[in-house]
Amino acid sequence: MAKYFAEESRTFSEYLLVPNLTTEKNTPNQVDLSTPICKYKKGKEEPKLKINIPMVSAVMQAVSDSGMAIALARCGGLSFVFQSQSIESQCDMIRKVKKYKAGIVASDANVSPDSTLEDVIRLKEELGHGTAAVTEDGTADGKLVGIVTTRDYRVSRMAPDLKVKEFMTPIDKLVTAPEGTTLKEANDIIWDNKINQLPIITKEGKLVGFVFRKDYEYHKANPLELLDKDKKLIVGAGINTHDYETRVPALIEAGADVLCLDSSDGFSVWQEKALKWIKERYPDAIVGAGNEVDAEGFNFLAKCGADFIKIGVGGGSICITREQKGIGMGQASAVQMVAKARDEWFEKTGEYIPICSDGGIVHDYHMALALAMGADFMMLGRYFARFDESPTRKLIVNGSYVKEYWGEGSNRARSWTRYEENGNGKGKMAFEEGVDSYVPYAGPIREGLETSLAKVKATMCSCGSSSIEEFQEKARLVVVSSTSIIEGGAHDVIQKENDRTAR
Ligand code: IMP
Image (cartoon, rainbow, N blue to C red; front, top):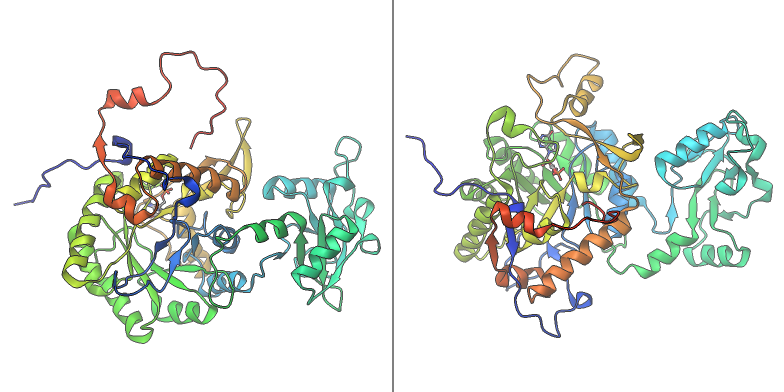
């Protein structure tokens, strides 16, 4: 006979944290959000890898490319570059992150001298910043012939089809620096010449990248950057259970620091086979697996040797798995069950396997709840898709800026295999498990993260905790009734213009 779980499954919005005593030790600047990302013998050794904020970006085309990986690692988190692309292009993205020199930025907005003012404006709207490189062939590493910044044009006075060569600042009027210039030297040049950006060029005049005044200052002020022992940014990569025998060696060669099996249902012999294959050949590789929603699933992947285990089936914002297949579990209950299994595993074996709550984080306070319930870190898709640094287009819909966001189980994401394999239809699915959507645009990642993490820290202080581990031990949670949820928002007042950011 079928087995029934004793309790109904619940979502984050059904819980609140009850405050504990706050002491002098509980101020936001004393809260440490670093957290382990691979299994270790807790109490006996240090984890091989920790991330500095408990957030990783989802293994999704619409979220995690090299741009997001660089931006998030610079803020202390980790991206898993999506695996629904060819091995070569995924490895190119990993290499791009590992090659990234903090402070020298490859140019993402590039035009040719024959591009038009309209092209420049479109790029500015898409990418959210105002400097475009003008190269002979319009590529990021072509021969630099000038730059265009917002100071070079006035939309109201100039025709949209005016050629870039007519209004750009040409190279002979630009201050540039040769390849090999150190960051410190570049910064001095920027200050001496009172400029906002400095193009770095090769002996042949080809563009290497820009040093921006604001970036350099940020780099100096950001102690959380997630760096490896060679001071390169740390990056993760998604993998699958089909082509791991070729994809994994290529990704490791390209420099991926962490791998993660990406599947909506990880309770399968395919994950077991993949984990065993990888661990036999690369015993030092850090490989996460999932997704699971209960103790049985957790114990299975723990026995298979997973370094971390992801939790969540059907809770993602773009996910329709529950509607389509009828499988899943409310995310809060799933985190609680897996956290209990993780603690029991630790008691039994002395091995602490970090767990990651994946999907379903809607409000910032859900982050604190996920951590309090036992998650060591979180994976987010929708949250990161909204920022400038996600790889998708920024558009105006109904008068508001939005960014595109689609599920990995949608036809849109899956169609890459069809293109890859010359239209033989391999990527075609019997049904979709994800939708194609828009999410409200939320500006630069750094500012968004600062706000969200300020809230997480404030919650932890209210709960008398200065670290995630302490928070998990001390947290007291209560299930809330539907009427007390209404009480939690502004109510029974006529609100003035609402400038609180809806997150
Ligand atoms: P979000 O943060 O709520 O947007 O959820 C992101 C998570 O949803 C990802 O990390 C995946 O685990 C999951 N996901 C991504 N694409 C799909 C899909 O097409 N169907 C179901 N789940 C998906």
